[in-house]
Length: 137
Image (tube, rainbow, N blue to C red; front, side):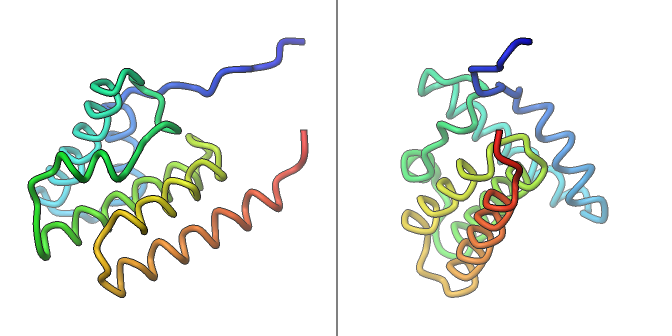
């Protein structure tokens, strides 16, 4: 019996494809393009940091420092990131504990907008509940 010791790595394009198909089937072309660009930018950021495909190493603060969006566009970017990492955790493409940690870091690094803050808080609550309910290895 082999025990997996490494966290799986996923290509950004694969994640973008599955994320858009599973989470945003009713999105218009503009929204799909925006979300795909976000996933590809996040994947490129991981690569630039020396962690290609290692989504569990994603640092929201360093990613947001590189992004030019401000005001409402910044809030939308952060909401989309929260959706992405929540989705990754719920669909077990990222350990739920890692996804919850990334959402906590995103909440800290992101805008103080109440809707965004609540989204991160609820996402963390759901992910933490899933992690607690998961069978122990």
